[in-house]
Image (cartoon, rainbow, N blue to C red):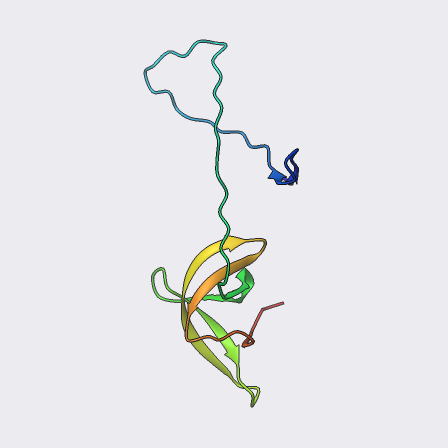
Length: 102
C-alpha cells in the first residue's frame, strides 16, 4: 500500500476494512465511511526499527557504539513507529550511534 497525495496536500492511503457482523443482517448495499486521524510526534529520539534487540518478554534494547568502538546494550521503551523508525526513550542521547544489522 503506497500513500498518494490528497487534494489538501496531505497523504492519502486507501485501505480496506472488514468486520464480522455476527448474527446481524446487513443490507447488500450497505456502506460506511471511516475517518482516521494520523498522528505526528515531534522532538522524539528515534532509531531504525532494525536496531531493536529483543529482550525478555516485551522489552527491547539497542546496542550503542561507544567511542572506543565497543558496544553497550541499552534498554529502551518503544513508542511511535513511522517510515522505518521507532521512537525510543532510555539512556540514549541525540547523536549516539546504534548497531543496525545487515
